Each structure stands twice: as structure tokens, then as C-alpha cells.
Amino acid sequence: MTHTEPAPQPFAILGMPRTGTHYLEELLNEHPNVLSNGELLNTYDANWPDKDRLLRSDRELLELAYLRFPTSSDKKVTHVGCKINEPQFQERPRFFDELARWPGLKVILLSRTNTLESLRSLVQARQSRQWLKFSCDDTSPPPRVKLSIASCEDYFRAADDFHARVAHSYASTNLLEIEYERLLREPAACLERAWQFLGVPALQLSGRSNLQRLENRPLDETVENFEELRRHFAGGPYARFFELDDAAVPQG
Image 1 (cartoon, helix red, strand yellow):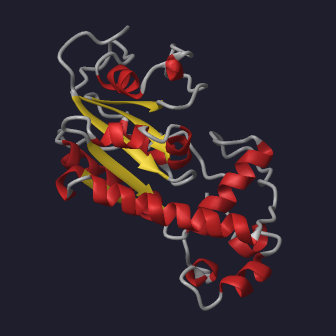
Image 2 (spheres, rainbow, N blue to C red; image 1 turned 135 degrees about the vertical axis):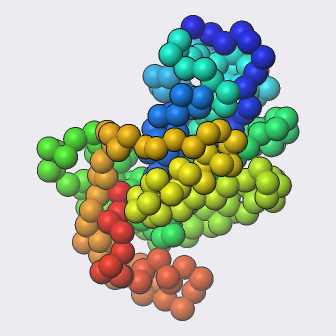
């Protein structure tokens, strides 16, 4: 059904692609008072019955997300949200500013310590058309990829610019940053911070998440031209993305 009561408190999950936004949303939606309705700007997101909604103005889209959102009868929603990935803002250049003006909005920003892992995972998903994995039974690994120097430079700068823009657009009290790697290692601790940030009662996670990591191999085994890229970026601000750490959290 569609919500008609006074609006719950709004929030948004933001991030570059492949930074754990879907996983975080799944965990947040375990809470009986929290509802996040997927990707507002994705035409094919199954959470939204209105497939023509992207024809609306930016303001109308936000009213749909926070005032007339789809919900189910088994939740008493006090906090409602959606998630938006950085490339979707590029498709609607004025939407970011409209979102930043929404009254009382709280933002959870997801990021990966290594932006190269995010790009690698994005290209793998595009090539395989497999964006999510719900079972451990599928043992077929994602395809190895070859990344151009230009695409890496563009993506690294886009991530830096996006994170800076979010940080400058929201007061520290309205912004929570969560690292993808910590979310994988310590989901309960991250969710405790999220509950406190949103202002809802704490909830113990069920541990029944359906999502699985798509990729567990290190970067040098999944990026065909890894050494070429490492040589190019050596000594620069992005050299750290090419430092291999055997103890690192498996990538997804």
C-alpha cells in the first residue's frame, strides 16, 4: 500500500557502485521501524511499482520517496530511506542539490578503502550481468577484467570528488560514514552505529543475510593488467590501491 500518514524521518544511503549499499540496506530493513526502498533512480528496481517515476521532476521523486513511499502492513515505519549510487547523480545533475535541501535528511555514506576494488567489481558485474549473489552454491568466479589507465584515473577522481561533495553538503550530525570492509567484518557494530545515528531502538541482527560476496580473489588475480596499472600509478596519490595485503578482507 502507499503511505498517507505524517512522514517518517528521511534518510539516504549513498556510495560509489559496489561499496556494500545493497548489503547495508538489507541489514537496515531487518528493523521493524526502518524501511529503505532500494534505488530510487533505477528504473528496474523491484521496490517501486511506478516504472515511469523517472519522468517526474527531482522534487516529485523525493516526495515519492519520503512522503508517498510503498510499504507493507507488517512495519510501523518511523524512518524511511532509499539508496543512490554516484553515477545516478551524473544522469540527473541537479538531483544531488535537491536531495541536500530535503528537510531533516540523514545520510549514510558507504566507501571502500581501496577504490580499485570497487571499479574491478563494477566491471565484473557489467560483464557477467551478475550484480548480486544469494547462495554459496554458485562456485563460478566472476570474469577477470582488463582496466584502462584512463578509466581508473576517471573513477578514482570521481570517487574523491563524490566523497568530498557529500562531506561538504551535510553537517557532521547528519552524516554517518561506514567503511565497506568494516561492514563485512563487524556488521553488528556498524548497525549499532547506524541505529544510534538514525535514532531508532537497537536491534540484534538475525544473522540470516542472503547476500554473499561475488569475488574473493585478490586484485592481482582478477585484473589482467594489474602490474601495468601498478607501474603507472606508482609514486602518485593512488599508489596505495595497488599495494597487496594477504591479510586484507576478501573483496566482493
